[in-house]
Image 1 (spheres, helix red, strand yellow):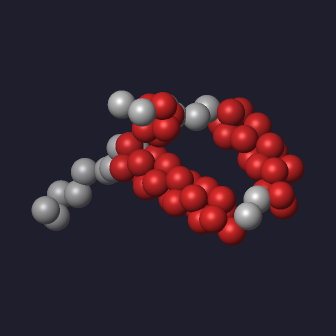
Image 2 (cartoon, one colour):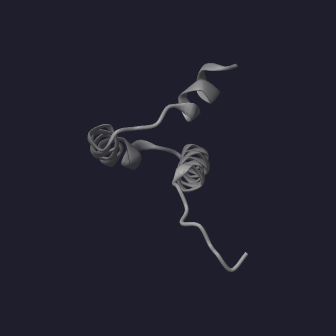
Image 3 (cartoon, rainbow, N blue to C red):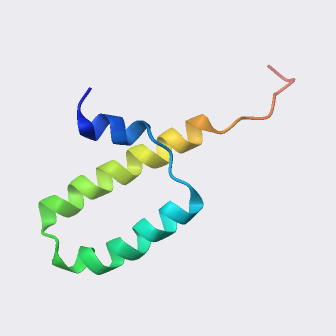
Amino acid sequence: MTARSSRRLARLTDAEAEALRLHLLEVIPRLQRHHLLDLADTLHDAARERRWGEPRPFDVRV
């Protein structure tokens, strides 16, 4: 498993996510287009994993 994929498996606490958000606000203006595309893909994957990890209410209609 690569270092990048192992980081994808780790969940962030709200405090860690906020710290990351503040850091990104400082860094993003210096990024180039390909960096932004890679960042967008990573954030999209993280959001999808977070949604899949949330418990869903049981649907009795199924």
